[in-house]
Image (cartoon, rainbow, N blue to C red; front, top):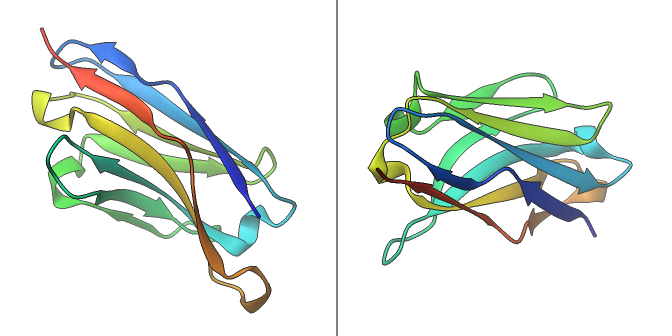
Length: 119
């Protein structure tokens, strides 16, 4: 079992920035692809960004050039730096840990943190 705890959400004006953090309770952090997903009201949960322990990243087209995912393997933490935020970015953001090693297979989710972009 991996517990994920997110922080850093809030209310921000369009064009503003926020940084989300997600701390993972595991001694095998590098065995997981860490990612951020979001779910807006009335919509399905969608991928925002993922990052492997080796550094490979994947971004949704809608956030490319504005959001940056990073991870600190020594601190078991993944971050999402969000710049130039738009009202369309309003959603609950969830941290995800996806196990890619046989001994650590599974998907784990945080409780979510609300991001609201509004003037």
